[in-house]
Amino acid sequence: MVNSEKFWHDFGSQFWEKDHVIVKNISSLSIPQFHEDQIFNLSVRFLDGLWTQKFKTNNVIRIYVNGLREQLNAESNSLLPCAGDGSFSQYHKRCKLNKSVKEYGLVIDGIFRFEPDIWENFCMKLGPFFNHVDISKEKLEVALFIGNYKRSPFGVHVDRSGVFTFPLVGTKKVRTWHPSYVNQNPDLIGSFDYKRHIGESVLLKAKPGEMLYWPSNRWHIGESEEGEFSVTMAVGSWSQVG
Image 1: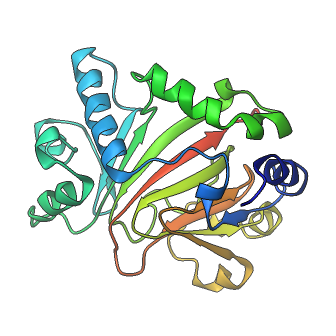
Image 2 (image 1 turned 90 degrees about the vertical axis):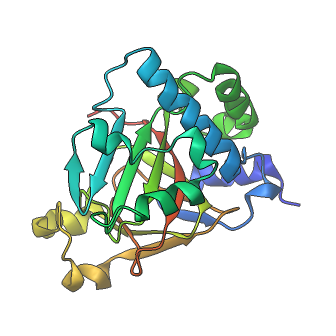
């Protein structure tokens, strides 16, 4: 059994805002774990809450179909998870029934907005993490990435937040570059065609039960050579400003 305090102490000194890390067994640490069915139900409640309370959804929900961002309307709303799907896997099957959809990517930001108790419990279990890094829970944001896209539909990008990634369905693959390399090769920014830059990248992989972390200055892009369906929960840590 891994000592959780020691892990987060070492993480804070060796990796936090410095380098990536892959944790193969998060069940051995004080890291909250969610299962596919829990997050699916949470997502449905969140989407229902958005419509009920008439939130502006443009920056909360983003859906990309065949590489292009879709405006939310009656047709694109049919590509969102609903209670009738029952699971992410069934949701994916329904999306694939639409012959015009070859690949899609759905991003849902702030999924704990209507679930303060779940959010507080999540943060409480991360107590050892907060003990060893200079950040508060108010600086954390949670998003879901769902779909079968072969590349992140916004190309190579940087989030300006450190990212903890928890795969729920499928294998998550993220290719990263150090900022010094991107500064010297600005053609990488927003790119989907980066074959000549692969030698200077690091490919991170994780599956359910594992965790990825990369610092806020890493340029990156999600990958799936075969268009594999995946669902990933990402926790952004906004330790930097600007």
